[in-house]
Image (cartoon, rainbow, N blue to C red; front, side):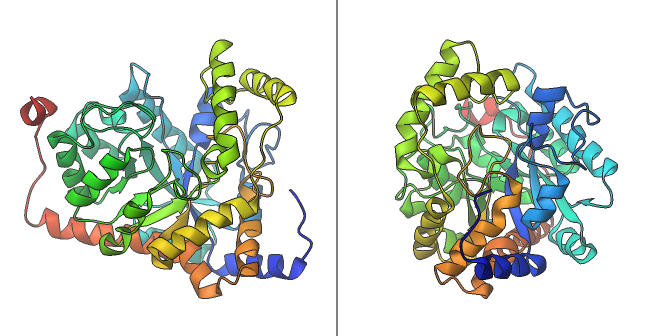
Length: 398
């Protein structure tokens, strides 16, 4: 971790996080455990430092001031068995919570998050990353909710039949009729609609459809870094009326303009050598590092991420911001935000920039708790007026 030259703000940051810890919107530890050790939790005992293998372990979560974590139960969109693979991811999170009860607490509601904070434990929530995880089935969506999933990212990197991704060629022009029904059913359940990864057209269609707050679990500002994974200003401007939130991500290729072209070349290099471009296994990382030695990587910093937050606050307002680092889901991280212990460096940077402690409390804890609670309130009202939807892709989209 890069040391700061001014210890006072860092001390202030740690003190603030002691009271209002970070709710992080997205961490891919379960997928890393699948890829590295096929869920052998003895081989990656996160009660001890796993610096050589992972961005995440309990000692570093504690050092970073993390009080709640949405664990991503992500599976790749090209898997033929996405639903059972998602169930395995959910099972992994449940095993982690059961294995480390002194540190992790299962959380399904905003109230559970506050209870975990009062107990000094890390509230552990789950988010499914990509609508492919429900295989076009609203019943499967309901099943994931019953198993504890509290948000679903509508797409990952590829289009699905009912929603366009940010990083694919437009297909349905945003959300199809079935896609809008998925959003409505998520509202009825109390499952947050996550608009990270989706096309801007999908973002707008979802905002037009939803009756509950939306989130971006790990996205930054497109005005600051022009990458399709980021959020356009016109969408950020709609968050106050929706009462949703955008959780800034740390992934260098999404926050640093100079890293965009470099990453495209690095991804091509990975595919040319037979690896998926998101692979972070030891073998894949050797290929990444070799490429980096030949082609020095543009390095994002804490300041880079803070630039996004400054802009996003100006456009959306402080009540609509959060943090979603994407640790263990990216090969590279910014200098000073190398792993989950780095959040105090970001808070110290924002203190240096004049952010107030009440505003930082909203960024780290209060906004995320409010948004989940608001989704619960909407669901309570909707369930009183309508039952589960049994619509199908075929019945609505033909």
